Length: 284
Image (cartoon, rainbow, N blue to C red; front, top):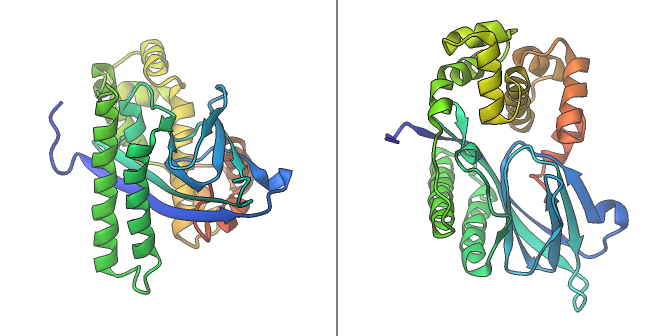
């Protein structure tokens, strides 16, 4: 697959860090799905995490975990028994390829655990991002350029890590055929889309298009479009002050109530709660 300088685009990046000393049961365990890739490293204490309904994995101090977007996560925070404290740092991020395919879709599976020698490198990038984010001129063009530079360093490191694990990126030829469909859906988030219209973009009959899409993406075409729109809505909630009614309108939902119901179904919290929670950065 041939890539050019405009084939890969950063769509979101947000670093964060946290410290916990007293963890009640209701804030010790987070159940969530997020529209971004997460890399999170406990620098003191541990995580216990299950992803997509799989078995729980213990992530020890210095290691990290890696998760794809939109998966149901159960994240448990475990204090260091000696210090009665947990500390961690993380990055939420997304890249798209050919302006339509999410980065995680290029890999059949992402490893959940990242061992210490690699996790420290990811954590180092998170630390540098936090310095930029916390600077007084974090919205300046220089700071934005620094954040973008660090994000692409993160991408390069992630690809190196996956290659070391024998996991290489690939785009199924069938997905390439559906690129016009994905791009059209991405560029028209506010329009009502019918399966017949999308099938026509792929030059396939409706039954064949539906079956091929389901085989390649695991979702029906309209379910995939719904997730794309909710991901866009989540970015709008993070980065602006538009009303829920306007966000619903711009992302193709019937009204604010329909949008709120679908958003909560996907991400586990209402749009209003999501917006409040991310005001200080994502929490892992």
